[in-house]
Length: 308
Image (cartoon, rainbow, N blue to C red; front, side, top):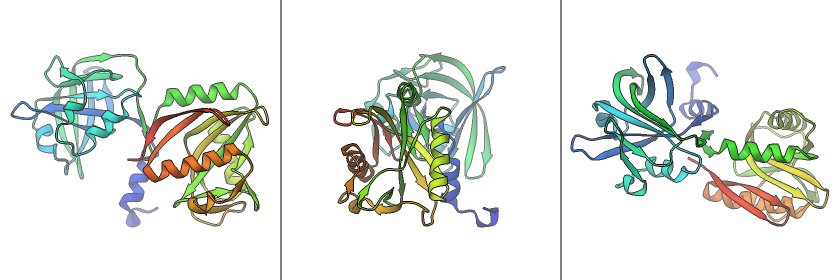
């Protein structure tokens, strides 16, 4: 897409393909009250001197306070702190009542149970279009060793949880499947009895293998999203690994996109497929996705992903 035809939402979605961690940036306002906001535009800059940066929208209600502050803290959230991220991403009046915190060595609010935190002195504030880039000089920090919370394509994810599940499933004979969603519809194969697109896992990186299969099958460009289900089927004695995915516009060479309401009325090749489609319809309607671990009849959904 050329610059002349840039669409702001399309550009934002493209930027969102890059997985990041999730942080909450904190400081105090002139009256001494704590303020904070969720941010994933964060990176380390330098070890000597110790510098990091964050990006802040000029439209942020915290803009004047943060940019005028002598210092700020960056709290890197752990994979169990999705609710903290959501709280500080929304206009909640007393956000700090929902989190355990204390003043850091330099005075900015530091959260409990984070993956790491950095208490900084403001170094520079640089203009950058509709944002500013703030660099901070790290004055104190701590690293808990906890895994961080991930974020990509508008959803949270927990890298460690997904990685362990796929590794465990891949030790046996595994099948890869995808729930390919587009505009409220899902791609299903078959006519009278429907199924998810599925291929055998034959070694290598599972998401790349699955994407290659799906693009060859459908003739569409497919983006593999987050892990959706890992279960052992006693019917075929195989491990099944299911991912969420999206596809570009166009008529698929194989299968058809069915609105979720229509898909729920169909006959599926297994109870596991039917359960996956029903769960996807429910979670898609509330924007809160999880990862299922178990077998085709019993297991647990770990609610680790929420649409932004």
